[in-house]
Image (cartoon, rainbow, N blue to C red; front, side, top):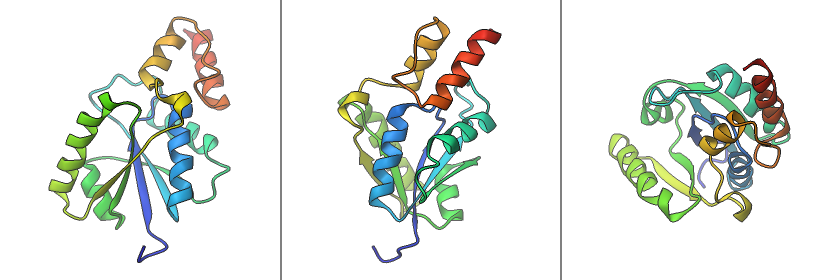
Length: 164
């Protein structure tokens, strides 16, 4: 690595953040000098938590990782990377079924910005089945989410159940 201060960016909607996300962030934090978790508002998704809530939950979940910063951003990811002078994207691959979609995204991002390189990380085997969509469904149906999300997320999910 030429620049020891550069940051790898792990983008996503993180709605809600799962233990799988935290596992990927932790793995990335061991590989790169700095990791930026870039939370976005995906207008194609119906979010359970606001952008501000998701950023807060992630900050709480990664506070033990000193080289990780959580931010929000809008617009094209390729533009955001140019703005912060980064060229490395982190993406998680849970199963082979994720690969085709992630491969298309990686190629599109590279098409938009030739400097971008995408690094795929696999989560711990315990999280290969886990997705935010599944967690939302479990929570909506009154199931226990303790094993799937960080404690602060579980608390927020439980407080939403009581309000709903």
